[in-house]
Image (cartoon, rainbow, N blue to C red; front, side, top):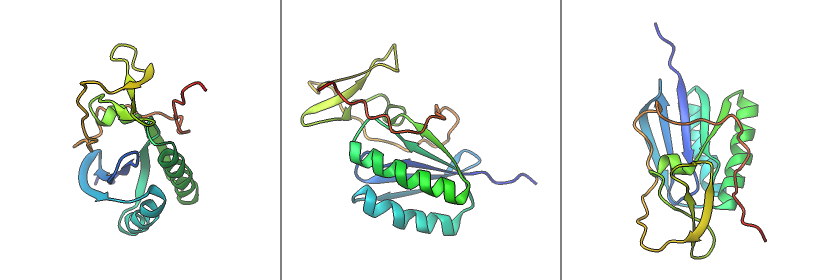
Length: 156
């Protein structure tokens, strides 16, 4: 009998916060809750940890809200250490079809479609914004072992 592999994907850089529960890389449950990352994540994870034996946590480490990324990283890193759960990062662009992501003021982060590691900050213009979506499976998710926040801060 095959052992279930439970993964949790957390998108905390937008409101509502989205969490997907994946069994053997297939989405089996979604949770969506409005609020601040610092208020929402603890209560959601208390419930998730009581319902599932989680093997991996994936979270969006940027770009996006600096505070949401920082809080998510600290909280999820702590959960991963205390519960011996592997932690991985994923780019927000991988979960919104490479659509611009809100940055500062009226500016947005844009991903270069050719050099995907190149991110710029500019005004939105006529570009259409797509919402973040939890994928139905994790087959094509580009996981990063480097989980530190990727703030993409502009030069001062």
